[in-house]
Image (tube, rainbow, N blue to C red; front, side, top):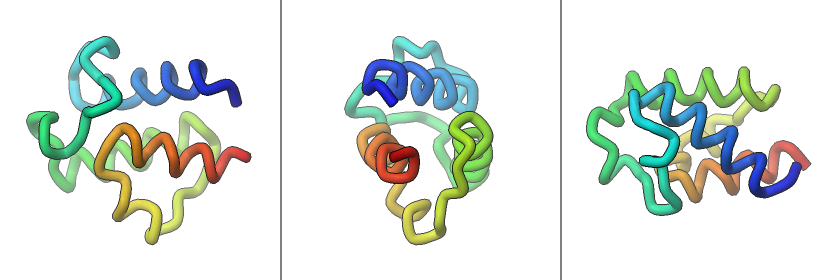
Length: 80
């Protein structure tokens, strides 16, 4: 998958889950700087990502998905 397309789709999913504009999601977005990113939102994000990208994300990967960068890396590995 092309990097730009992946980034755009990821931003769309994250913005929907967190109630933000896609333009507000950046390379540095993480649990530390997105208000309301809690365990419930993490679960909603996981389900949304699995639906959007047609993947099943293993638990060992889920626990590392705490930022835009880490989520993108995880998706890149799973989509290959």
